[in-house]
Length: 360
Image (cartoon, rainbow, N blue to C red; front, side):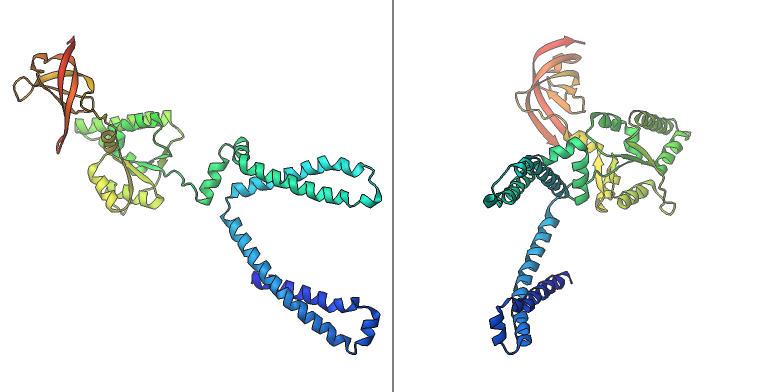
């Protein structure tokens, strides 16, 4: 519809110009024309054709300009507009004294010419400076303005909320993870997870009761240290029988990320296309990698299966087999890694002890 309006505007405008253009003919020429009305309509028709061609060009140009504006980020449009306004203001301030100068009549055309050229030059300069330093300008006004704009236009994705599972809370490592700052976004604790923790804490089984109380204590500490990060979510799905199924449903509903260390829950969530952050996978991924020739301090705690072997363990539970380390059982030694082996049960490191550091 808009395209048609643009074309018709040019057709009628140029047609009207052609219709009135006949009146500009010299009187002698007009007297020799027998039918002026027909000439008017003929001129209007000819100029309307020109208007149609110009209208098509204007319509195509408008659509290209519209498409380019739609593709331009909003912060670029904003900063360019500010740069244009500042450029025009500077142009008016700097060129105003020129209009006060006494200029001869024959050079009076210089004033509007200088004003137009100066305005164009300073406007282009303002837009160029906006392109170069516009984002810095926005950041000075509002440190979060750029990120908000980029999220609104889809260039950046917002941080998905993390949904805490009962096992992740009881595990306790989430407290240290939050302290490091590696996990972003809000932490949602569903009401049914709180209910499960309370149920565990009220059980007669000492081991389960201790786990439930530990989870409540950890959650309380996290909420005190990070009050803006922890949110108690009121969602509960009475028609869904299990807590794991409720967690998966909530994650799908709010497009959240499920934070857990439950292996079976991770598998079920992956099958249902729910994003998972598994604390155990993270711990496995950040284990230090020891190459042959690396040294590490290790306490040999028992004898190995083979003669003269000693066995020790790293902080993450990795077993280290020390050749010729049987004599150092009970001592802390600095060992040199000779090789590493990945088995179905986990990783195993082989080493030799060059020296004894300390006696236990």
